[in-house]
Amino acid sequence: MENFVVSARKYRPSDFKSVVGQQHITTTLKNAIKNDHLAQAFLFCGPRGVGKTTCARILAKTINCENRTADFEACDQCDSCLSFKANSSFNVHELDAASNNSVDDIRNLVDQVRYAPQKGKFKVYIIDEVHMLSNQAFNAFLKTLEEPPKYAIFILATTEKHKIIPTILSRCQIFDFNRIQIADITEHLKYIAQKEAIAYEEEALRLIATKADGALRDALSIFDLIVTFSDGNKLTYQETINNLHILDYDYYFKVTDALLEESISAALLIFDEILKKGFDAHNFLVGLAEHFRELMVCKDPATLHLLQVSESAKQRYKEQSEKASLSFLLTALNMANHADFSYRTSKNQRLHVELLLMKLANLPSAISLAALAQDEAKKKV
Ligand SMILES: Nc1ncnc2c1ncn2[C@@H]1O[C@H](COP(=O)(O)OP(=O)(O)OP(=O)(O)O)[C@@H](O)[C@H]1O
Ligand SMILES: [Mg+2]
Ligand SMILES: [Zn+2]
Image (cartoon, rainbow, N blue to C red; front, side):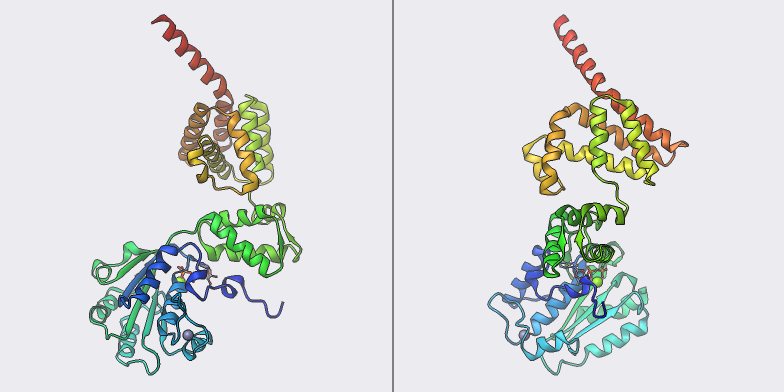
């Protein structure tokens, strides 16, 4: 336990090819290096924990590498790469604008920029959370950004692009980082679990990936947490839902079965069980709507790839989706969505969800009645 390093740090990618889910960015950066066509100012935008700082560091290392590979990656062996690895490179400077946002901080930085690098070709300045700079600081920075010495490269990173003033935006090459897909996060977790020799159930990893909501760093932190809880044995689905206090998706299948069988009582009892376990009714509502959505995309092979669940769960979704008609799913999705909107304002929230379940349980007959009426009307014409 002594040497425990959190996975997010231990597995920070050190070259472009190991960055997950941001190929549009890493490819462009590599091409720029290849063609010697590097911008001097970059703006990396995107949600937290998706690789902005990581890519900035890789770029800094790669452009200073003395012996790049044929694939335009850093060699990891030359003096420059080694000093990067040891965090002792003088060619990369990181400033966290969240805590250093005054004019003086920026002036210091601007002063440093004047000195050419003693070794290597480029000095790279990474300014994290750049939207936190004060207006004055921004202004002090503009001139340098406009006419930087040719060895200086600025990488500004932010999670809030809309807060960056247009004069800065127009001086930077902008890269928008993606939220990372659940499937990609799951794959990455698998890779790490294998490296760490941790046995796992795929469902568990997928659940962590879902919970991380697109942020790989969050996924890794949750992963560490659950590994610690599970005594280093096996990472199971059951243990993960218990630790994360996530509602087992089994419940959504059961409720939907009850609704399709028009059993109000069964649906209400399942909902009661969920509440008794301490789950929030609103979360259940949102989860139910998502469940209907998954069933909906199963209906058409064209949209099947939009299903965000694990391979092993896919079959189950397909089977349930075959039992439900398209009209049922569409109406149910619509009603669940409305109930979600009005949830906060309802006085009796339990009843609010129960009422939805009762209406949904009535839906199959309502739909067949409507179809019948339509047939009758057609006959009369
Ligand atoms: N695209 C990615 N591929 C692989 N690992 C990633 C990726 N994004 C994040 N990580 C993991 O998460 C950690 C944090 O990533 P990083 O510092 O690059 O995020 P960031 O986008 O700068 O986030 P923030 O906005 O919070 O500064 C990394 O050390 C790495 O382990
Ligand atoms: Mg960062
Ligand atoms: Zn090198």
